[in-house]
Image 1 (cartoon, helix red, strand yellow):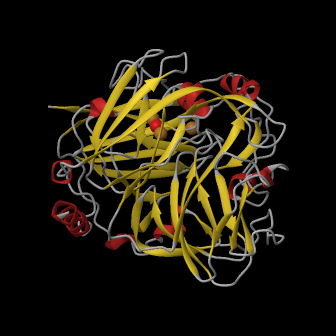
Image 2 (cartoon, protein in one colour; image 1 turned 30 degrees about the vertical axis):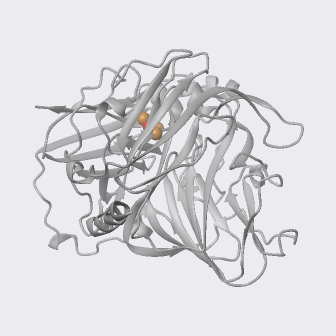
Length: 477
Ligand code: C2O
Ligand code: CU
C-alpha cells in the first residue's frame, strides 16, 4: 500500500518535467500481466454483415490494457493468426527489443509461437498497440493501452472511442499499385477537399465496407450513458489505416487536453476534433442537460453515419439523438495550429542549435506507380537518421505529394515546432503528425534520450508504409 502511494506521488511530481529521461521513469517494481492471443475472427459490426478479420482475445478492437505510469507490464503473446506477427506498442518509450518490429527489433513471432513483451509503462497517456504486419493491423489487430496519469483531471465517466473501418481489400490492393478508384471522404468543405486541384488523378485511396466505433456500426454501437451534469473524458483513437477522421459531439464543445496521450500546456475548446491515422485525442466535456447526442464522424462518405455512437444521459438512451451537419461550416476544428497557437513574433524566437538535422522530401503517389518515397528512395534504401545519446535532433519535411502523410516515430515523443513556415506558440508533443499535402512543411524536434536501438520512422498510412515511406532513427554509441 505504502509503495503504491509512493508511486502515485512521484509520478505526479514528474509531470512538471515534460519528458523525463527513461531511466528515471522506470522505477516501479510492482507489475501487471496480460495475455494476448491473436486469432482469425469473423467480424460482424452489424446484423447480417460479416468480414474475415483477426482479433486479440476474440475482441475487435482488442481489450483495453491499463497500467499506471512506470508500472512493469508483461504481456504474454500467442500468435494464432497463421502468419508471422509482432505487437508494436505505439507511443511507448521502451527497450528497443520490445518495440515489436519484425526483423528490425525482433524475429517475427511465427504461427503458434509465443513471445513475452516486458517493459515499464511510459510515458503516461492514451497509447495503443497493434500488429506491425500490414494485413493483420488493418484487419483487426489493434487496441488501446491506457497509461494512467495520477495528475489528470478526474472525470465522472471515461470512454475509449476507437474509430475503425473495414477495408475493402480489393481497393487496398489497387491502392498499392496506385490505381484505386476509391474517393476521398473528408468533409466537403474540409481543407483536404478544398485544396484539391482540378484534374488531380488519385489512385491511392482505400475504400471501406463498414465504419465502426468500438466494434460495431451505428445504430448497433453501444450507447454510452452518463448522469446529467457528468464530466466525461473521451480517449479517442483513429485506427483507420489510411483516412483522417473528423469527429463531433452534437450540441457540445470538446475541451482537448492531450494529443497522442501528451498533455497540452493549455486545454483548447473545439467543435470538431481531427485525428490523422494513428493519432489520439483526449477531450473532456460536461453533459450539462439531459438528452441523447451523437458522437460521430463528419465526412462526405454517404455511409459515414455508421461511425457514430450515442452519448445519453440516464433515461434518455432511446430518445432520438441530436446529430451534426456533415459540413464543417464555421465549426472550430482542432487543427495543430488551433491546439498549439501560432507565434506571431517569430523574430524573438531563438532556435536551439540541433546536433542532428535531417530533411525529408516526401514523394511518390504518382498515378499507376505504387511507390511512396522519402528523398526519392524507398525503405530499406533510405539512409537512417544517425543519432547519439543526448543529441537534439531536428527533422524537417516537405510534402510534394497530393496526400497528407501521418509520419510516426517509434520510441520517442517529439515536439512539432513549425508548420508551413509558422512557428507554434506552444509546441505540440506527439508521436504521429500529419504533414499536409501539396507543399506542406513541418519541423519536429526531439532529444535522443530513448533506449539505444533502431527506431522506425514511417508514414502510418498503411499503403504508404508498405510501399516504401519508411526509414529509421538509429542510435550509435
Ligand atoms: Cu503505430 Cu510502426 O507504428
Ligand atoms: Cu503517407
